[in-house]
Every structure is written in C-alpha cells, then in structure tokens.
Length: 166
Image (spheres, rainbow, N blue to C red):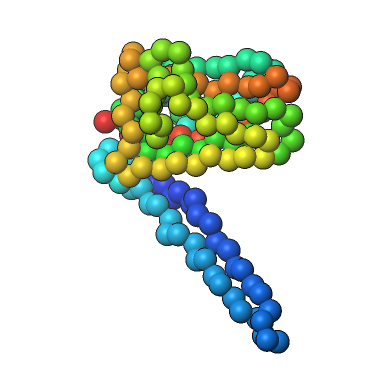
C-alpha cells in the first residue's frame, strides 16, 4: 500500500519599495499559505501522483487520458476520479506556445469554464491550479486533457498531476 502526502506551493510574494522624504517605504505582499493534501480520496486528500517530461513536435497535440492510459512511478495504471492539482510548464528555452485544454471530444473540463476553453502558455510560462475538492474525471466522456504545441518547434514540457482514485 502506498501513501501520498502533497504540498502545493503556488503563491506570490513581493516587496515594493519606494524612497520618500529620505526613507524607504515598503509594501509587502506575503506568501499565501501552502495547500496541503493528505493521503486518501476525500476532501483535501489525494492518492495518485503523476509526473512526466513530455515531448511534442511542432504543430502537434496529444490527448492525455486521465482515466486509463497513464502509469504512475510504480507502473500502475492511473484511473483518476478527481484531479486535485495540475502543474504544466512550457520551458524558457521553448520556441513556441503550448495550449492546454479544449479537447475535441471527452474533454476534461477541470478548472476551465467549459470544454472548449484553453490556456496558452508562452515560453517560460507555468500554469498551476489546485482544488481541495477536486475536479471530476469521467472515464469515456470527460477524461481527456489536450496539450497542443504551436508551430515554433519541438517542446519538452513538464506536467505534474495530483489526483484521487475515488
């Protein structure tokens, strides 16, 4: 039996400083709290982790099946019922944009408003989304996460998924 404990760090910390009347005035934006997911399948829990560096040739796309085609680090087939966290990064060295979402059929809607929505990741961009409740994956009708590469060149992108099996 495996257990999975997850910490998602997706926050912005900033220090804005300006010199006024010979002194520095500082406005701090503190980090947001980490999102912690315990091991299991209910609210605030996850039991599946997937991480991969994937390659897409120029002007190609792939459909990532969240319920039945991926394997975890232990070689077990992943069948997700909920996606709890997503990280997709288009590397800085990339020469084209990645589009995430908008599969032609059986689209995983997840954090998007509807099945046709996409997010565009330019070179160096990172997309992180987290839900303690999780976004529903429905095998055969709502389990495809599409990732498409633009025309600029081949891209080796990173994807990390934290999911629950129930």
